[in-house]
Amino acid sequence: MEKVLVIGAGGQLGVELTLALREKFGSENVIASDIREPHVLLAESGPFIQLDVMNSNAVAAVVKKESITQIYLLAAILSATGEKNPLWAWDINMKSLMNVLDICVEHKVAKLYWPSSIAVFGNTTPKDDTPQKTVIEPTTVYGISKYAGELWCQYYFEKYGLDVRSMRYPGLISWKSAPGGGTTDYAIDIYIEALKKQSYECFLSEHTYLPMMYMDDAVRATLELMDAPKESIKNRMSYNLAAMSFSPKEISEAIQKRIPEFTISYAPDFRQKIADSWPSKIDDSDARADWGWKPEYDLEKMTDVMLEMLKTVNRI
Ligand code: SER
Image (cartoon, rainbow, N blue to C red):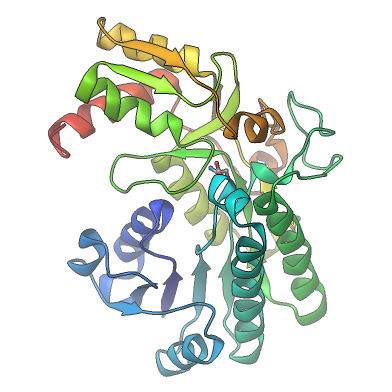
């Protein structure tokens, strides 16, 4: 029987991934944890522990007491927040990973999931159809910590045989839980503001193409990667993962088809430089070949769902 610990379960990805894991393994077998108070969707659907991943002893105690077999480490400081306090972001992103890698080895946790990001890529990486293996010179502290972390994951796999798996998420778009501190977050705010005010001022310029993914695809990809037989995981750093790419102008046009009065204006800020250093389109053929990845949502399908769900469930 699997016993799962999700660390950073209150974040944008954490909430939805925890709900999916609870569906898969049974609510009582998936412990959500976060440094913050529990998100309402987590508190009412299964066990929750308030836990600081920087406190290695506290995490180890939970792993031991609950006989944890899988950990999903989702706690992280994202790109835009990280740039405001780089050393703090580095400390949290790296120490959390090192703590958990060691705990997994010491307590024989069978599997670890740790997400990486398109932020590992920098200005010297090919922007279109960015290959799995390419020049990697990240410009943000978030990207640097993710790339260093990928190497550490591979190191723990090689040295200790730890079954650690990872993928490089594009910008994730969701309606259940709010994003926090990312450069791609505009693609969520735009839907919310379109419903509230029929207008949006975008912090990126109109032709900034970035790789994006609807949350249901991201959650499914994560479950599929973790389910794949060990021998099919040929990459122990992190898989490129893709679904769609669009610019602020294109997402605004998709919204205008459904809300004709919607208008967009542009006021790029410090996040433009971060976005400009990232790829516009990712080649994820290794993920497709090794464990069968295939996205289901494109911009049109996602726009239908986002507007519908934000309107009905979130009552915007
Ligand atoms: N969505 C993340 C960010 O913008 C990228 O992984 O920071």
